[in-house]
Image 1 (cartoon, helix red, strand yellow):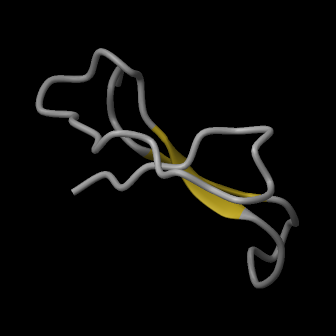
Image 2 (cartoon, one colour):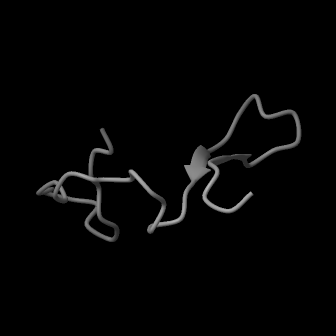
Image 3 (spheres, helix red, strand yellow):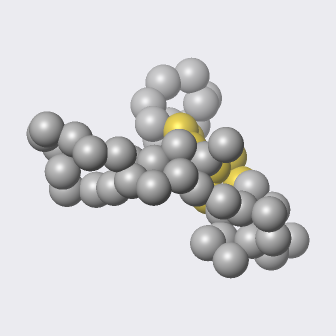
Length: 50
């Protein structure tokens, strides 16, 4: 179903690794705060999704 959050994990048993929710940017109701100002690790934007 388009726009539905899809849980993702980096290993098969889903007990370790990076996990996230993949959501389309134009999903209804999706809002994000402005990007945080960071001192390091500036290769990607970081923002709160309330």
